[in-house]
Image 1 (cartoon, helix red, strand yellow):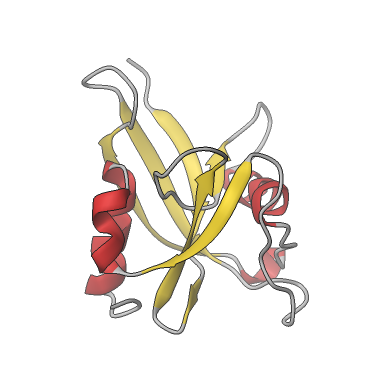
Image 2 (tube, rainbow, N blue to C red; image 1 turned 60 degrees about the horizontal axis):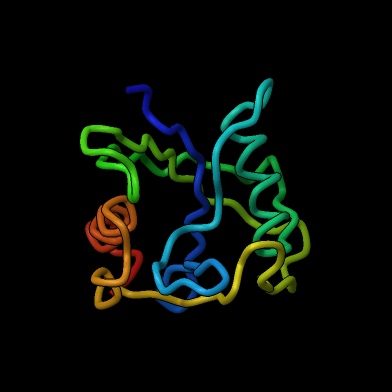
Length: 135
């Protein structure tokens, strides 16, 4: 099975990681998503961040933080998600994320929220703690 390749935003404020829930669901995940045909990982990150949380990212600020490879949530056993993690700054430093599109709510998560995350979110929170970004 081909992996699901995604780019995700790691936006940290006050030692909390921005995560979202889809409308009508409780599972926390990072803003981001799959690359469309012809897109780079960076392109997908910028587009998905705009669509999901209404932030316009400054492309010159994108920095790859790492990656997570794990079982894909809701997929058959053995299908993995390969998630590239990026940090980036909004073009407007005063801009605040707001839920849009399929996003029901925003959450500022810590490692204590890992039980609400799919495997890739758990691994991302683990990495963020290891890098001393979140509590």
